[in-house]
Image 1 (cartoon, rainbow, N blue to C red):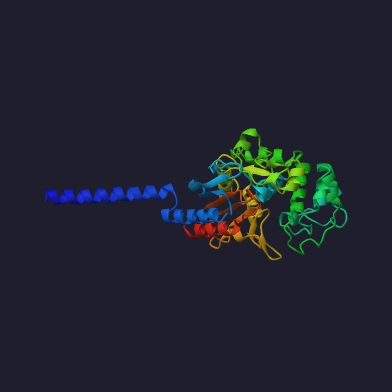
Image 2 (image 1 turned 120 degrees about the vertical axis):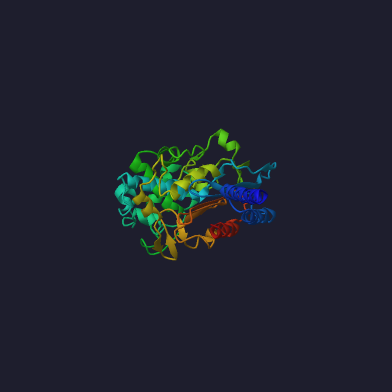
Length: 379
């Protein structure tokens, strides 16, 4: 009887021990099967020449569930491995992470109203039929501006480029068409500068990145971060490594509302977790909750839905996958970067690559969308 009781007790202890091990395994992150699915997609993309490598991260509000660097950071002129701390040119992720968030920060501070016309703050812009364009129109890409004005308009430097942007005529009435426009976000970057009294790069670091501990997120990274940067293509007989790829941002001195921001996976996790927490952390409030709700509210635009700064469901959301909730919002960047946040599923999904290296021919939106579907399918 004593032996039987002892045996039963041993079995109970063994069961409890196994349960603890399983709980610890669950606490460490994603299911190994899911991890293999994600990594097989990345390996396939590398083998197909879509990118030399990638950093993929999945996190919730409290912790990182999965983080892995795969493949190479650089294949020319020499090969270098991809690492978790690789610095990436975020390209158009600049729009939501730096520019739109800065705009909404000013909204929260009572210094800016998205329903006001842009000309209220930038009178020189409100000419040639642009006087009715509102701040929200630009945030949603429905202001009627062309996607990009001629590159030659930027050759004379930032001041002349701004004068030429102000001379542009709209191609449609505000709200009439959805046209994804870099010009609109260059204007928003100028708006942040005019209202705050600080250039976009300084305002974003001071009000967003530094408070969140995002010490490796900035425009025009310094020498130390450049050493860890993923190169893109060649410009003027040198590799762009820690130098913005976008030609207009480059001619604007590396600081622009549409492109130019550099960051790392760890820093973007901090940013994503702030958004999962509806605009703040226990220590830092970047956006008041009502401002966060306004920013991330899906708004109907021609051909889909957008939020202020972020994509929701539009012709540009192929990297979204098809299993995130309707609360999800995200964005991609031309250089091969993707970020989606799903507050309802408590998920941050980050895919960072330098798909343009070395020949500008890589393509990652489809495979990033495949990974996003997997991430959205597993709670």
